[in-house]
Length: 95
Length: 484
Image (cartoon, rainbow over all chains, first blue to last red; front, side):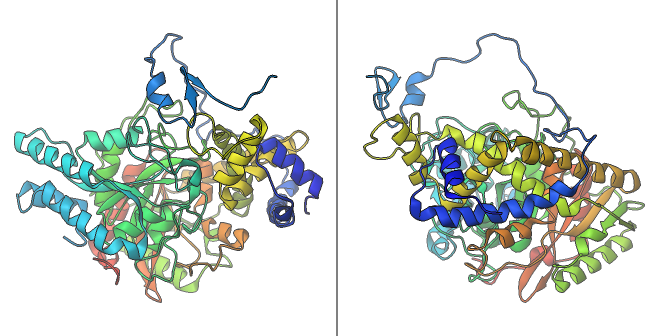
């Protein structure tokens, strides 16, 4: 099994990673190899098996809905690529 | 100084044979002189280390020092360290100065440990050879033409080379145990939820665990004692009492039932490794353990299951790297989409991108049930294999890896053969169990690891079993030819 160019483009789009045309063939081959390797799972009967998301079957612990964090905006924005007046700057989105 | 264990250093500090400032300086000097050969550190924090060491000396004098007071250690560069670059060995985070400490880093500091620096690793912990690092490959001190294993390869090489007595690592599919095996060390992956993941850069959140790496089981016990414990900042941290690991090291092994899965001795295992594991099992018989053949019938599904679940979780976790809030941002983005897609294309290395794309595929509409849900169902079958086995035995033993350290470049171009190096370690992460790797021999001058797998939250028994083997063997005290 290997993925065609359209499938690779779709994945790249979903993952927000640009993929050059020159990389497509190798990626398709590599991803295809992995999909072939995992294919052995399809032969296993898992009809009544409950999917396992956490090895202890633990559920997310919740806390009281109260503010516990201080405002650290300046501290955290000090490492941002581009900020202005406390806002993160990105290229213009709306004309 | 060379090849001190953590316990040796604690004895030396207590006896005032040397101060923390002195021993820290010796390690820092050794790193400058010898690390260019191994590339085991990404960042060395010399000034901070000496300040911490002087504070530790003061605390010890005042009688207020913690368990590891004054002991220099290294942290894998996956743990956020406030004010210090925390790169995860990626170009994406080459400029990332962590604004807070991981709980593991705080806990170790609280215990008085001194941080020498941040160790090299596979990019975002994705790899088994430490060759995917943005900062270049790490070399194995036992044979510098070989890899140290991965992803905690820098931590392993630093210890084996005598450039740190111990270090932290993380293990998602074998990333503590496999490099420990390949570098002749003892390394423990604790039970999922035993050690906080807060501030540990996430790869696959339902599999990732932090743990200790050192020369001996005793040192692992000391480090785990400082690292472990419930943390309200990690929503998957488990509320489990932390036992006295060091105090439990001599717990009698008489009557201990050790299961040996036949699937771990199948085709693909280097015969020399099989033989070394068999001799180690003989030693356990002499210690009073009973060895029993068992079966873990879904073993062959562990690697396929992992290579859906881990990339799926990685694709979600790594979506945070978008060039907006921190880390790498591409030059002159045309628009927001270009900012995202080019930042991620330029900031991530090939293996990371491959895994994000696989994970995206497994989670995408139309494929979710066939891949992700299927893998989660298989995961339960794998866990049930262990549950069944632990009705019959107290511990499971086998090789840590099918092969000893392989040559640099040998497997990097063929990810599938690389993935198979983790064939014995991966199921343990899927099941959330604790496991330890300890040295039990050599083949062609390269170390061999024995893996012991325990019941949920029973790290204490693994440490005791490893410690008592090390009282009767000296594999753990062999010194790598390249060591300081």
